[in-house]
Image 1 (tube, rainbow, N blue to C red):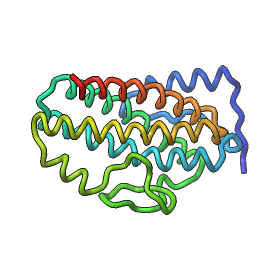
Image 2 (image 1 turned 90 degrees about the vertical axis):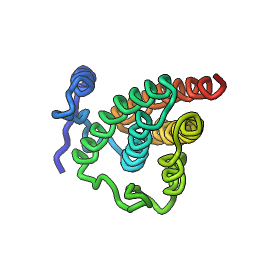
Image 3 (image 1 turned 180 degrees about the vertical axis):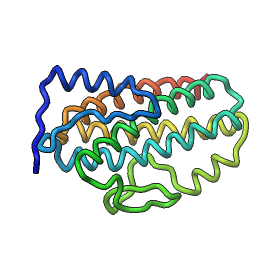
Image 4 (image 1 turned 30 degrees about the vertical axis):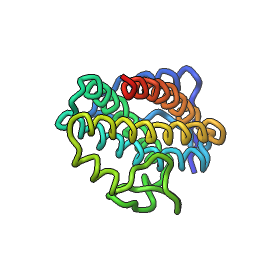
Length: 191
């Protein structure tokens, strides 16, 4: 096995360049073969389908929502999570690991024999898909809060157990962004 080591400056520069890459050029943040562990792999394998479901939920909003603030939030979720998916897929490829290992209901993939915290069931997604207007907004906000709480929990596990600096940095960004969005969504539900 070939080992590749990166200095802190190269890693920082690569992470910044990776964050600026366009959709047609997903650049995985560098990661040394020796610098990741099983927790990093699990984090990426589980966060990818978790984010994919959030994107699926976000894409429902424009045609169903009656609240421009919900539409705006869904757009921001879509723009933030799609590049993160590509970044994690790049890590898994660089680590020589499959992106996913087990199928979940609804075509989502996951690793392990349990359901991920915050994932919506097929019935939840069908119910959300059928709703419109204020009823859709309430359901979507409620489900997305739970979904984000699950992502925050997964990211906290990565911070506690992961070894890869890039994966841990992404986990912290997920915690910061999604906790702020949870607070925003709670405000919208009260409003």
